Length: 126
Ligand SMILES: [Zn+2]
Image (cartoon, rainbow, N blue to C red; front, side, top):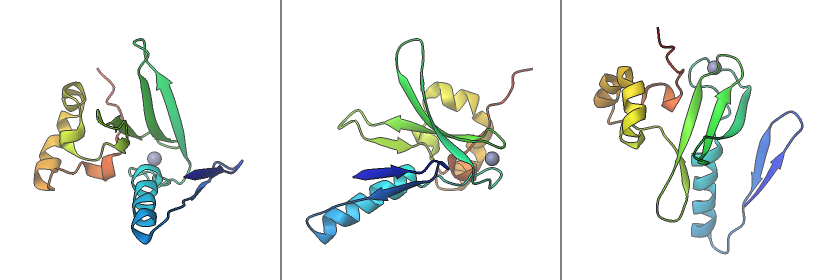
């Protein structure tokens, strides 16, 4: 897999496969992981890939809307280390479920999927 990043921030991909099935899998991966070019909250197309490192040296991958600052966050599978966007309630950690408790009712009514395709704004604590 190969990514081409334009100076305008637009990203495109090249995939290669020996068979149709292999190509299919590669395309599916690209679409699942990288097709977040539009904010699920406000529809803005200015999104940015961000990697942060917390105090425990874990890296956090997220795509952030440059307009409303909503984000979609990524998890990492224990097996194989593949990453995936957290778009379902059961993909959130306990702490994240606490922070996003207001999304639970929606998810329960929508087969476990989070509102706005997983995009959310951190609630400011009052
Ligand atoms: Zn937005």
